[in-house]
Image: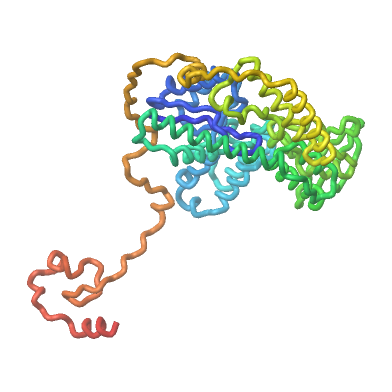
Length: 484
């Protein structure tokens, strides 16, 4: 069957699987069914959806996710460029370089993109190119300039994370597995994702801060962001300190306007000294969810020591996930019994306290003494009696919320073929077709004692005249071969 995973990004910038489905075919009805199941499970529509140019998936997304923004993979579109632009223009690297520079630019506005696109087509005489005009008609579905107002719009521009997720699932499973075997392989892959997330969470909560910029805002970023995101934000802080400078400064309606220069590029940053808000023309916070180097350059000159709360995205916070999500109960089901809920809350409170004061030895010592006193208080009162042993079968039935059936009959699903799976032979692309094959090296035929490419001693009779077989070899050829 066809495996359809829903892949996203967690707070450590790692791939995470939000869900998965098995489809019999890749029709509009099948995609609608799996999207409706995803919506029923999560209760809300995703803000942005990224996929390839599959027409069935496009129709299903439009019908099910009415408020979501559908985006096409840029890599799949730009990969077709060499096959669509043929002839002399294919050998012109300026055409491809200009198109790539324009399409992948995340800083320009839609109006700027449209004017530069028209100038590019006029420069190379491509005004009547059918494929380029078709891609221009759907430019609002794949060009980054048209997504600049959507938060986290540049978090994913291609389906590379989805392809990586598919490859990871293929490591544990094959098409020959039964449904039960596949489910076990799927759980193993999800456990690997959970383990990687627990390791990343442990690094974020245990690593001690070591500053590089000598700025208080760097230490504040370490306290709020995960370990992976902090390294990215610290790079922006360092570049804002050492590679950016203020080239101009003005005041407009109570707002300071700074011109920040970085590598011959000038960006405009509007700064409000009252609420510490800053708006950069590169729109780095909107694109990625954290402040850019241009804003950090202005904050350094204005002595802003902490990141304002409105610029701290919940996606990148180190404490956004409760500690109980890493427990066994959360992996196999949520227990709603009052005592279990309170136990999980106690663990969350203690973990949060330890995380907040992890760098303060005095506070950790005080917390430890208080916990020891609480422990001795409960131990002196006596522990409650241990509950009676419950059969394992009853525990499993309570865990899955369904009684065990005596007989289960499940047949294997029909074999499905994906779109584009081919005919089990390699498809040569335009780059391979355009490249000439090197000539075959001549080999010595031991019968005629000549260096030829059409035959050898085994098939000499098929490629030569039968009357010339008994003729003696040429002495000149004999000499050349022996000398070689």
